[in-house]
Image (cartoon, rainbow, N blue to C red; front, side, top):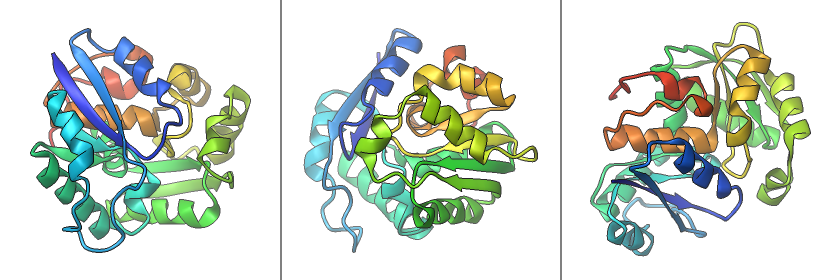
Length: 236
């Protein structure tokens, strides 16, 4: 049994993780721990997240992901790396964050140009696209829905999600990225890829894929989109 650990900033869309667990091989377990405060805004040695990761260690997690997209990219790539270092040091296991999961997943798919469909306000979307550019990805198009916060995003249904991805898609984009772990997307991944005719990467999906990559697990689950049909996983 492989246990994957996730620190989340809130309870929105937690059921996405349980659905993923059901779609993966039966020997993979998803462990979620709430870390409402998140990483400190300053030094990486500020003690985060010693208390939060203890529960994951006791659960036998082999890797941990800070499952917050905006919580990992908003202060830039260097700050995001510092977060991951602090998380790995506190947890004593391989660590990453959702933002890096997007980058690694795009590389796994061989994609260089992406479109971004973000529920965020424009300034937050701009910070995410800059993070992607610094990682070597070309952002062909980006759309901001301007949602007020996680609670609003968590209440969105299929209608809002389809409108979001349609507004953002661009023909030259090799994949469409949908950040925000508060958004329910897992049950609609296959339908979104059929609609757009290209891979769709969403925050909770890539968070779990990133944890699997860190744990060196190789799985094939077509219900989780094209990302989960590629074997072996690329170790970056």
